[in-house]
Length: 203
Image 1 (spheres, rainbow, N blue to C red):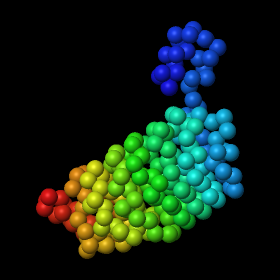
Image 2 (image 1 turned 180 degrees about the horizontal axis):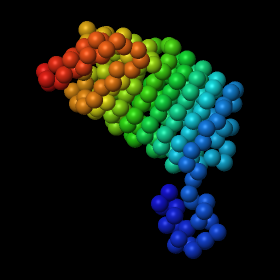
Image 3 (image 1 turned 90 degrees about the vertical axis):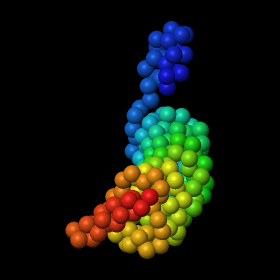
């Protein structure tokens, strides 16, 4: 956006100055439409797509200012987020999520996943900037592999996932904060906190 502003100022095209500031946020009911059909004439930093059928995030390529994407109640999502779109936060709530195409995205630091079909953490190993991961709404087939994400700083899990991780695998080496989401009794929350402190002390 700064490059565009400077270009306009250099050209002294005052009538175009308003157009270089994109609309910040947009929310849309998608239904059976393709993502590309929803994006016509949009240039936003925050996008919320609701109740879509089959969505392919590769179609977000034209949104050069996009920083945050939220997909809610979709049927199926292919997370082929283009590397040239500087998204930092991505939230996907879908019956099925195809995660491997997301691998390697350079700017994504926050990811929230909710799915009724299993997802695999191994698909996230190629995200160099990933620091915040919320899996509390997802069915994760390889939760113990979360330790393979050395850059992870914040991890959010539900109670069942916490129990599984405690039994099967270590925490990421660089973890700085963790959250226990969903219903949990106070005693269970205390046990979670005690385990975290103990696990951190062993590193």
